[in-house]
Amino acid sequence: IALAAVSVYVFCEALMARHRFVEAPGADTNQSAGQAPRAAASQTVKPIKRVLVLSVLMLFLIVSYSKAMTPDFLPAGLEAYRDVVLAAVALLILIDALVALRKQRGDNVGSSDTTYPIKAPRPPSIQEGAGYGEVLAFLSLLQEKGRFIDFVMEDVTPFNDAQVAAASRVVHQGCAAVIREYFEISPVHGGKEGEKLTIDKGADPDHYRLVGKVTGAPPFHGVVLHRGWKTAKLCLPRYATPVDPSAPNIITPVEVEVR
Image (tube, rainbow, N blue to C red; front, side):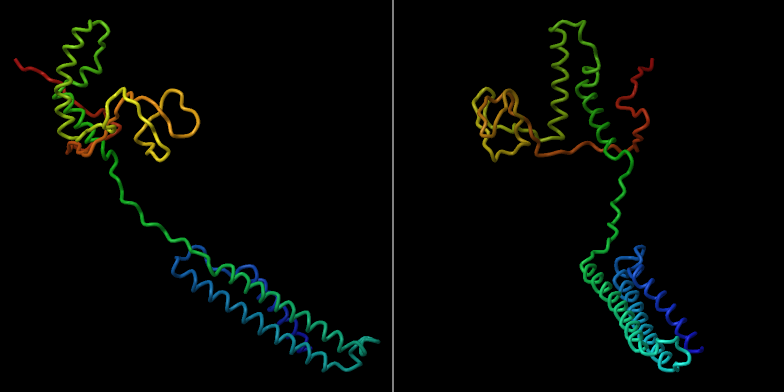
């Protein structure tokens, strides 16, 4: 009776150990990248040892229990097959343990090259509204030097060409001075407008914008309509006052003449 009770207990322990071994052998996904490989290894070795030890102990108890039984305790006709039944049960337990062990080894091989996710470094925080101040300062200079905002916001429809031309001269001079101060602008194409040009296959697509009848593959043959512009320097004016993109930021304040 004692051998039977211990056998049942060990058998239940073996089943529970095998269930934990097969279902959850891996590492905790919430662990860090450095701790994950060590945790996975420790959690794998312990279930393997437990399954093997309990399987061997189960075999020993079954053998002891079966050998201790006399013919009086066995059903009629089972005495001749006792060794066969014992061998079959022992073989089943060994096969079950080996299958579980093989499955775990296969999982380890498949996961040996697994890369554990590493948290990317947090990008530097960008202040809300960064860059808006420089744009406001640049527009403010265009307005101050060339009356640029006044010109583009004014409805020029009621004025004749001579009046628009006179106003544009002032805008051109002031805005050109600001542009030259903060940019170093030159043409993209060194030739002249109106000349013929061939765009080869290896040409930089950022340098050319094709218009007209664009079909097929390069090279393309056409005429230069505009030479394009590029800048070798980009230095916007600084704006010291914090900028709130949701607020009505002032480009140019109201001018009031005090009398």
